[in-house]
Image 1: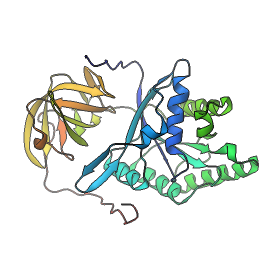
Image 2: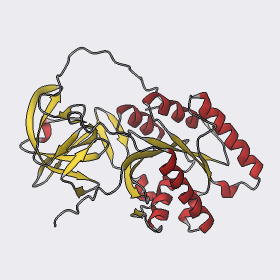
Image 3: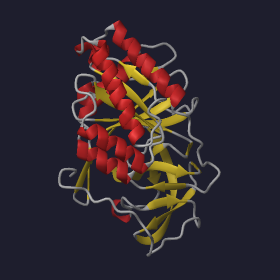
Image 4: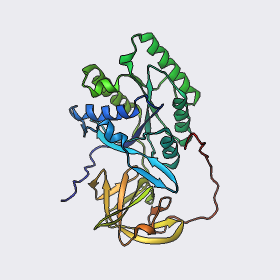
Length: 319
């Protein structure tokens, strides 16, 4: 059966949910897909909590990373949304770039307020360069006193300011992800309000489309009968179907041709900076390519054996 075509009619933005364990990140992700699937002008396939939470694990050099990608559209934009089940997964994903975000939704339970991992995720967002944050105060249906929610909001804004985010200006939306999933109109409206804030507060990033094509390889898989596919986020430039690329880094440089481009299991004629894609590579075996290499326009990247870098060592608790 022919693959459905990816229609690029709206600007594409990468976002994700961050925040303390059990504050409702995955429930919110599911609620967004439900509400947008029922909202005129928007588009989403409702993805249940358990389907987001059962993310396929990638095992790479002894490190296990779980990450779930869902896609949806508001009236204004197309989004790729990343959600990670475990705390250690966030740390690894955000540092490795598997969850590169143009903006993030920080989820804080109004019942608890900011917790240890809330602070860690804000610090991580600052360190890896997540430029914009929108806050969703979750579980507001479980707090009777609005003044308590006011206090949580104030504490959250102060915490964001502490890490050089504009705490006073960041949109803070109050809601209940579970209430929205259960179809409560009030809480479904809160999700619409959240996505309006995401649309308006997180700008569509300027993409480096005029630079030579470059994509870091995040994962490699074999598709039977078709060949080897490398997945990753296009860092810069554009790539059209049947164009040549080089595989650079770790091993000797290899040349190949891209015979298929897919995003969210839909086929594309070209990809551009910011897209999370799978590229089908002609004549390349599974063992010829690995995570950490890059695909690039031939002749545009020179491999180096010496460089200056910044190392973040995971603590035992972080995995």
